[in-house]
View (cartoon, rainbow, N blue to C red):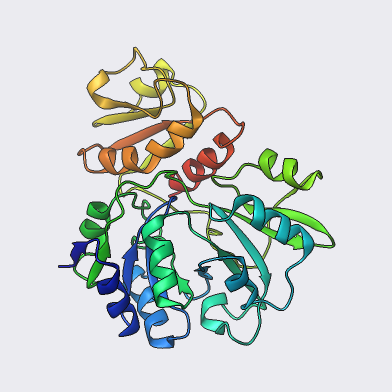
Length: 318
C-alpha cells in the first residue's frame, strides 16, 4: 500500500525516480508524473486505466514556467493567469517541442494550470519540473478530495500520497481555450464564466460538441458504481416506482418522501460553493452505502452550479 505523508522531499524522490505520486490541489487530488519522463506518463494512464486519447493537465509553479511550454501566450491568457493563478483555471495553449505528444494526445495544444495548494506549489518549486496530474482515481470514477480516498482507490498501485488535507474547492478546474481573440469554456469548473467575463470585459463562448479531445471530455465521468439518476425534482412517483434501497443527493432541503438517513444535502445553507465542496465526498459516501440507486437533484444553474450540474450529468450517464 502507498505511504501517506507530508514529506515533500520524499515525493520529489519518487517523482525523480520515474514513479507516480498523488498530490493535493485546491480542486481534487491529482496523480502526478514528470512530463519529460515517458515511462512515468505511461504509468499515469495505466494506473488510472485512462484512455491515451484523453490529454493530461500540466501543473507548473507559475506563469513564467507555463510560458516555457508554449509557443504563444495571448494577452487574454496573460490576463486570466494573473487574475486566477494560482487557482482552478486551466488554459489550453499552443505547445512547444518540450511537451511530449503523450501528454496532449498528439494535439498541438497543452492544458496548463498553477495549482493553489502550498504543499504542491512547494513540490513544484523543489522539483523544478512540470507535472502532469489528472485526478487520482480510476478512470470515470468519482474524483478524490482526501488522501484516504486516493489510498482506497489507488493505494496498491502507487508508492506515495502527499497528504494536503481535504481539498478546498472540491470540484475540478475550469478549462478555457482561445480562438480569434475569443475565450471559450471547454469545461465549466470552480472559476465561473461570470468571473472570467469580469476580468476580460467580454463575453465568453460556451463549448459545443467537438471531436477535439480535452481533459474531462467524456460524456460519462466522475461516476459512482451505484446506478445514478439526475432529476429536477423529487416526486412521489419517482420514489414509489423504484425497487431496492434508494438514496437521495439534494441541494439544500430534505425530501419528505424518504428517510433522512437515506439523504445527503450538499448545502443546508443553500451555498453553491459549499455544495461543490461537498459533491464528491457525498458521492463517495453514497456509493459505499449499499444503495441500489442514487437519485440526485440538479442544482440552480448559476455560478458554480453550472459546473456541479456538469459533473452530476456525467456521473449519471450509464
